[in-house]
Length: 302
Image (tube, rainbow, N blue to C red; front, top):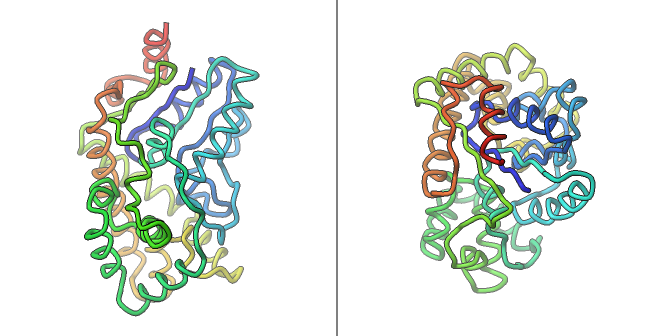
């Protein structure tokens, strides 16, 4: 049985997933588009070292910062990991909030070409000269369906979609099956939801904790290693804002507030996406303890 736990950022997915993994004696695959990178730990809310000791995790600190990644690459990795896990356990648990990563598990991508480095370089140059909005407008004309699915003006996804179109002449959205997204009978999708204001309060508190845990120092160390500020992996809420603070563009207080605002907006986009899926079995996380949610999941799986 494949168990997918989704929900907006800061909704409590990690704790529930670890409890369930211990119950089922299985492993967890992170369906997060940034936790797969090394070195960006605090701002991506990776499981703590103690949590990683409790349960084996996949797709955590796997890639170097300069490596590109996307939902299709994740899907390919996940297929192999799942085969390994199912040999030892009856269940595999996925946890994350990255919408396309989750969708790739439910509705796998059709095969599409690998990235063309020349196309990528040309598109990056156009962004440098004309701004990301120029490419966004181009993609909107070419593939309006994909624009509807994208969670905001995502640089990496815009470039990837345009690269595929440049290589094939086909819109990126055409590489998904036309059938309605529905999980198979061996997949259960569970969602954690919160009243909006309570979720926003949790997000604000999480950002404050990230600062206390050393997010600024983490970003300083990454840049001190000579990593480019333009890396895809660093084009991430939390890191971009702290980079602007370190560059002297913003005061720290402004950077922190911007992180909170951007994270709240991201959570809103996540929930808008999830609402399209009528198969998600929602749980009211504000009214239940983690233990109660665990028992609820076990009851649903019986």
